[in-house]
Length: 412
Image (cartoon, rainbow, N blue to C red):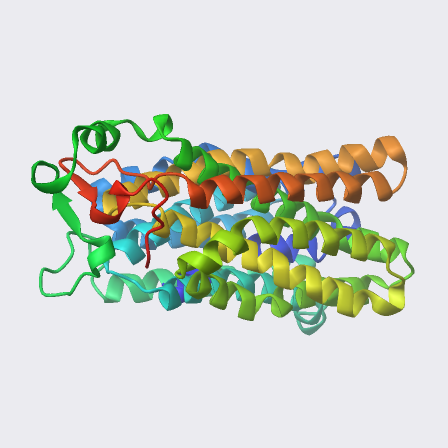
């Protein structure tokens, strides 16, 4: 699954890393470029139900393999035919979303630890770094062809699909009864120890549970910040006097610097005392880092962009972990993943477009980054409610043993 997660960002960051070349290299109209930046994220929001729907019919493994095949086709088609750039980007977004929404369900079904969640979230960061950092070297190695440099990313997507199918595309089914379950995560029959209130809460639909909305808001807000930054960071850095090549390299550094944080944040989140501080605290740190990048001179951008990459990646890792931590079982995790990523990415699609519009109105980047800092403070608020509310459950006939406590925080 780590190879799958690596494939879920290059389609976006490779375009972001070549943002200044799209008009000349691919003949894309300048007015279309902001739409191109937002389109895959918009596709994420619309296609979130596709993952669970395919998983029910094909099994989670085969559904992810099909998504990787779709991604390979989309990445190739959008550069071979210029008129397919927008439809191909939208299809790539749908494929990415299908794979992304199923990862927490598979981790949950296989009793994955915080390390497995961390490895998957780190794969997102590694893929983002490779997409941004290799676009210029690949273009140079391929005779200056931007189309070929963008299409190269179809190869690892195809490889991921083949590897999944070779291993049988196993279904993510019930947990093996031979696998020990931690007491705080054990599922117990409602009739044995849970009261009437717990039974009623477990039967509610997902969208009637406040914690589900808090997790969704956290995921959506951190994604909005991430896609706004990755879409326009290179343009900001060029305005500070950096070359296009150096700006693309710093965008790659933004992802590389965050790799350890994306690995460790789900592990640390497994400790309730740490989680209660981390979830709201990350929002405050992201706000400070954004303003640091805005105010800092070109000479300090390597350090400042690195700090921003660390806190942003930690937020993404925590967003994925919250789906696992705040759900009672695989069924709930799958539905909460679809809700948080579907609605969250629909919200996130406003980030690149909103940043572009605000920049156009204000004529500079100050208003944009102050607005993003405000979004980061909302992220802190969402994090607080996500970890202090009741655990989410839609499992039929079961509740979490730890959920009887009002402020219980599930562990991985």
